[in-house]
Image (cartoon, rainbow, N blue to C red; front, side, top):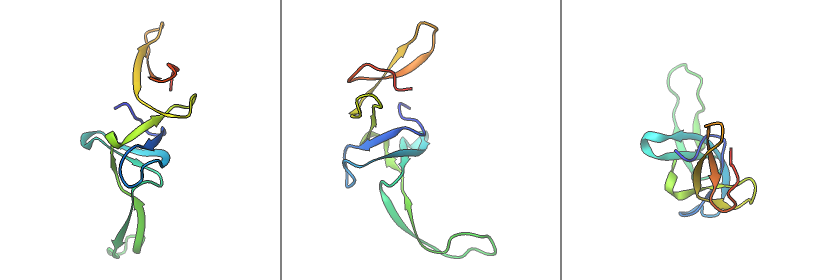
Length: 104
């Protein structure tokens, strides 16, 4: 996965196009990510036994497909594609395709 937890991403298609947020969770099996403040849904939650859970109508973020988000480069502050580069010490780092700077 080219996008990791904690990355800042921008939505490039869909209802929330143009919104930015931080990735809270990555779901690799489904190729989806959960981004803060993006793709908000309202869930009707009922009480389940004696377990302490939120009850009522809960607003929460739903997963969004990873193809609909783009990583925001911390150097050029624009959405970009992600590439990889092998450093001199043998480590693999993600790079911005626009400015060729390391993202990690």
